[in-house]
Image 1: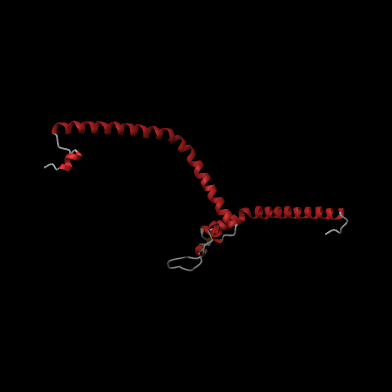
Image 2: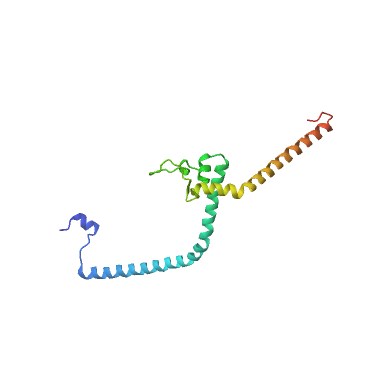
Length: 168
């Protein structure tokens, strides 16, 4: 039973012949759209795939360097948590955290060989590998600072002498 509102809105009535034709047109349109989208996605993927493969390692490397630099900056600014992260210096890094041996030191001699954690080995390796480099670079830093301050003092003394004042 059709109401006046249905008539105003143009209520749809089933039509066995027209419905089949409409379904065919809709299916044809869907297939064409799907084919066009598949082609477009394939084209986009093909165009950008090689670029992504080539640039991905570079992007990962750049991001890793940025994060490492950010961590080092935080360490140099005195942030203890960052320094602990950099050197794997956690409270539990020297003692067993759970289990039967909880609280005992990780480092133990087993069959005549010292066994320890990766964290301890990392810190040892950093000191062993770079102690001279760090010490020598620090000496060069201090020498450069001393040269700068001495140079300023000489210039200040020269200016004072030129004015007839006593040296500092």
